[in-house]
Amino acid sequence: DLAPVHIQPALAGHLRFAALGDTGTGTPAARRIAQTLRTVCAREGCDFVAFVGDNIYPDGATRRDDPLFDSAFESVYAGLPGPVLLTLGNHDAHKSAVYEVLHTLDSKLWRMPNFEYQYQAGPARFFAINTNCPPLTQWRLARKVATPFPGWTFVIGHMALYSDGPHGDADWSIRWRWHASRDHVDFYVAGYNHLLEHLQIPGRRTDYVVTGAGGDAEGNPKDSKGPSAAEHRFKHWGPGFAWFDVTEREVILRFYDDAGALLYEYHRTRAAS
Image 1 (cartoon, helix red, strand yellow):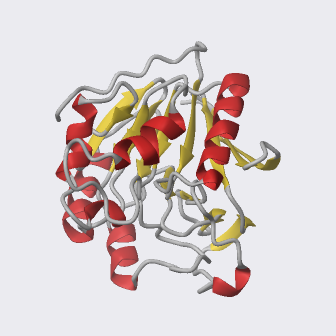
Image 2: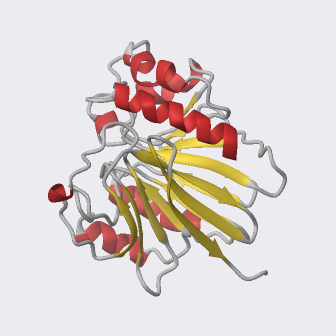
């Protein structure tokens, strides 16, 4: 990795973070969501922010000093209280994704130390994966998540495995490899589809969270490729983001819209070990 990831939770026993994706437009809509994100983080707490891919539209960065780093990110998200930990999306890889990794050396806010990386904070571990290379990525991930861990396991990736959005569910072979790699993941957090969703598969361990509404959400149900093979707990065709509060015993998931209104709240608990 190009640089280590250090996260220091501000509240003892809690790890709080926001997650959003498909952000890299620099449009007035993206800036409005960013301002709401700052407000929610100031009120509820954010030890870091996870970006789930498509950080720079339309084709990623073309050089290390590309002005898009400022117009699509630095000037939009300045003032967030913690680091932004980014994941590669498909648009980020249209040119050379290496420039997004290298921007970690040039920014106080942007952190993408590798094409894939992992980190741990408080009671949770995180795997940021590159869904542009699904077979190899899933093979490596299956080995890593199988390692025993007493806390919660989050996977952050761009391509949603399940969604009613314009891209729909991932290809059956990708989903088959995912489930064949064993259920060791508590939350899979993704974007790619520009809406907010929470989905579950009965009898499976993983909660699927889609938070791809950080830039310009499609916001039109007629674009759906659904129904998904997973069951919906929540769906919102509009801009916004997810927020998590993680403790040893519980994870709280919330969705906020671009005006800061609370759209949805979900609590997941587990028995004491």
